Length: 262
Length: 326
Image (tube, rainbow over all chains, first blue to last red; front, side, top):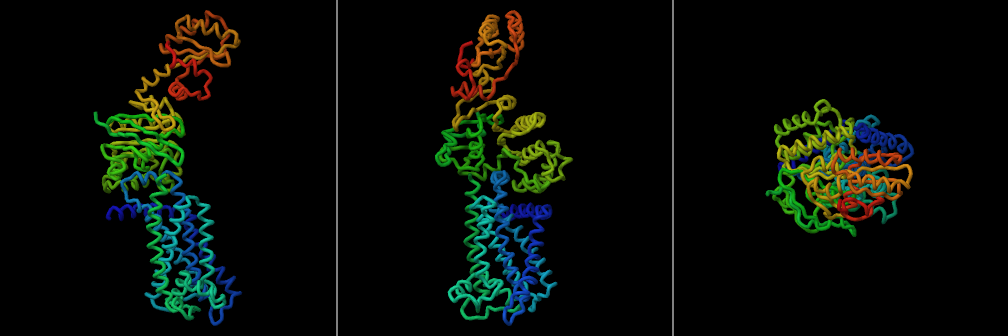
């Protein structure tokens, strides 16, 4: 166990040095989220009317969610790069913990997601978004977002290990994320959807995460409807995310063993 | 005799392609084995099986007496691996790379720091220690890679084509480092495509072709089997070739043969400089115009030709001295 921790820590250190030395990595977690906040805040925000809701209050939780999910692709691409050079063979020839390699990558990518959250919060604040609740409640919202981010990152790692090709990861990642993103309450209220589609969208974990964040931050929400997911978004979000995590992580660890044994 | 590496009937297939067929070999502790063969002959597959990276389909292998399939972690504590490409992290400095690998070997902080400093010094990387590896030259990367494989002072070192792509000075420097390691008591398995490299370094050579061992022996034994150095003489006028061959043979240089194309006369020169002197005298006496005169060391092609009997595209397989009495 202590080996697992020290190996994981050493490899997290490796990735943190990368973040400091590869400017693109920092740009991807700063420029892109800022662009999203501004685009939704000013471009879409000026055209969107959600009845009874101040849109700048409404969309921020959605942007946070989207950026967390986007972490999937960059992790998947990074895993493909790692597999492509001889470093994986070297790690596997060492008497170290195997899963530490994946821990190193996923934990440091989670740190990038956290940095993105901080940057977006600052920009959001500048354009008028506020958290109206207390400290713990605010923290709870961010914790839920990071849990979503971590699940997405492990999903990306699994995708990278299964496909072993960076381009395939980016395109398939997009195909997987898009329907989840649009069939959710991240940017638009679900009231306008046809009945059956609304039921699907309600159970979408991204809807649950966004609505929980709105609730926890005291932002205006449109989730107030009927049905279990609308009334208990936090419970749905937690249960679904933890379940996904428990399925994805062992799968990723297993395919790591397989992918590198060629 | 004690063996650091023992393989018995190792086989491995990828789909329909059989990469290793029933490979059996043993390497005495403290010696250098050269695993020689062309691309795709199974050298890397062998190394991957022996270093626990790949599970063989059948057969057994033991490193320092430990089974690679049953006790992989124990095996990994005792081996060092340097692969075909320098497996180092480009974004880290040389020092950081070595410290990371040392930490993952669980050597303890103090040991890691002192070992890393020693190796940087020995491999002439101290000055570059704080630069990112992406600024290193090819030779420096390979040295760093080799240093990383030696961090735990492993009993058995695997070097998969350690000098491929290096220029001569760097290659010679690598050879020196490999020899030093063996002198310190480590067992080294080195794969190479170059007969000369195996000749320079290895105590014994195993020749692989299509996943099978086709020959085994000391470098001298192997070279003797292909007839050592050859002298090649090209005559200007093809009609004179037979006469030149006869003159060389008569002067006692060796049994000379005329290659396909009819202008190149080839003769084994096992006797060294004396044979070259006799050849010059013979050619002077004969009087034909010579356009080219060269000494050629046996190449891997020659070894293959004589061992497999396959025509690898070389014209004079039948007249190869390895298959003749001379």
